[in-house]
Length: 156
Length: 156
DNA sequence: CCTAACTCGTTGTACTATACAACTGAAAGT
DNA sequence: ACTTTCAGTTGTATAGTACAACGAGTTAGG
Image (cartoon, rainbow over all chains, first blue to last red; front, side):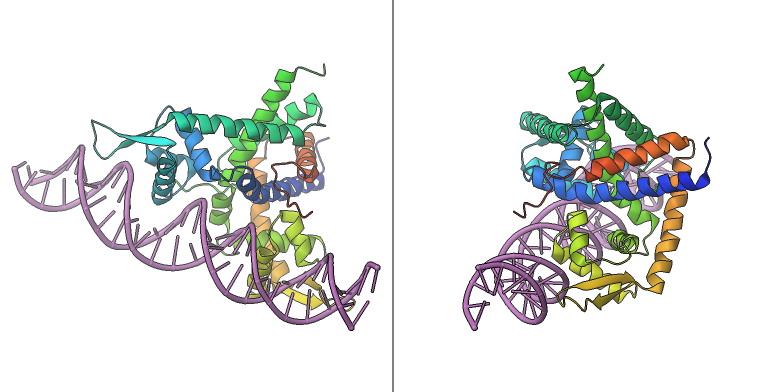
């Protein structure tokens, strides 16, 4: 049953193509949805909250971003009053990042509106299909690494 | 069985989160994989070939990109000798795009490496799961528009 | 201690991907 | 014809990044 290598390849190609297509649109979509909270910043903010505070370096490592990129993103978030930096008393090189009240709030509302958008879009999907799709995505993302193309961070 | 709204929401959240995670890293990952072929251009080129020739406007619509963006991407591809523009004899506004031999070749090799990456990553998936995942992605992406994340150009 | 080496973060610079708006040329409508 | 609409291009501006150079704090070797 599992057979046909061609079928397999066909599916692989579709997955590759569609995932890519999605990625391409995601940016634009997110930008239009929340012009307020820049996409990337949003993600970083979410991570900060998720971790209950973390360092810029952690963010860079987690998202495979250059530290300069993170630095600027954080600066933006700070300017927007969404995160605060608390210098670590033990090591003055480190800044521990935390969401401010406003940051937590912004995060919550963004999350809510995103949920609404997804609800609409997936309105006609059955429970079962949704559950399965979610499962596949989880499986895909956790599989490895970087998600896209395997890209793989050298991370040596 | 149809029901639990909570289950539904749970699935939606997972989908949202995972899809976002994917999109979030996609670019960096793709960039690392093939630094040669200007990233975005690759996708456009693939679409052109897939359609056996198409117009810039089609690309813009498909990827929800501004036509200016597509115009420049195409210009890049042309400069690289990967696509050709053939003015449509019936409608002089239109340029039908086609991959050149070099374009087809570049695409093939890039696709091969991507495919390999996906194969590795999805190696332990069954035919069935792959097919279903592919189908879900197709459905998700074609679903439409309108509301997605709002991406949509109002184009009204 | 004192310097070398390393770490965290910032700043300067540059490039890609985009969007939006204004514009040209070509069809289509009335 | 005259206007609108459509396809594409070009000017301009903005994110998001990377990389390299640097400043400040920490740690290791002598």
